[in-house]
Length: 272
Image 1 (cartoon, rainbow, N blue to C red):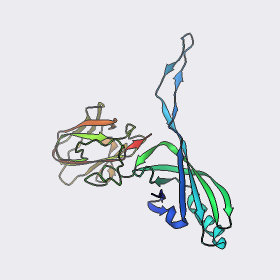
Image 2 (image 1 turned 180 degrees about the horizontal axis):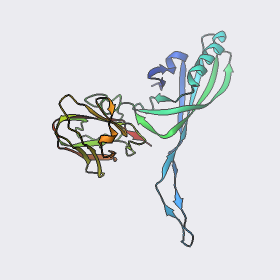
Image 3 (image 1 turned 180 degrees about the vertical axis):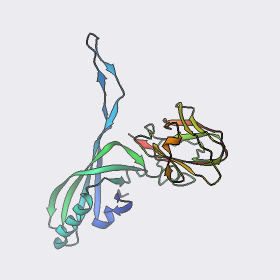
Image 4 (image 1 turned 90 degrees about the vertical axis):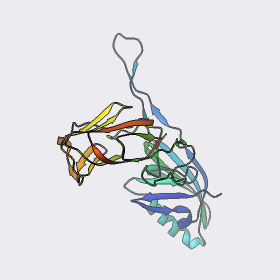
């Protein structure tokens, strides 16, 4: 089966196979680039380890590029370069790992011309965040879609959900990385009623978020990564400035002091 290759630029998908008659020969990526951090102290043997982090890694894609006539070769090649070389980041998607997308910058294109209308191209990209992301977010579909969540992406057989009306529930993070709202996208939406002091506890991680004012049935509280908003307006001063993170696997969440609860949790899984 032919390997498909696409770029997602500002929300629009460009299928390179169809636009440029590209045939993908090989997809090659480097393993995760772990950076081990150490601190040394005078008079102490060895070093002390601190948290490791993952650096960016490259992806290289060998493609066979053909045009119907020799006259079209440079025209279509220029069009391809115009698409690949963007100032801003974009996503790379290929069908070897169909449920993942890679946030990239282009690092180079190697051109080996074989004939007037034919060349082998090596497309090179930097995955600068050091991880890939699930194509779908947890709210993409009410039921997990095989096109958005490939086999082997950490999905278990349990019926995990990300919309809840009870005060105590599980949020499942199926990725390789914890979700840190200071670095990653995590949108928590809450509607409910109380007389004040809504509390969100991630019992698994110990994280705690408090919103002090009362909530009415017409209010919507949204915690957009590290920024809370009530009805679209920033409201950080009305909170304890707490953050809610998600560790890998199951997270036991409890929302207290609130009735008529309706809450949604939207994020993508992150992979090495």
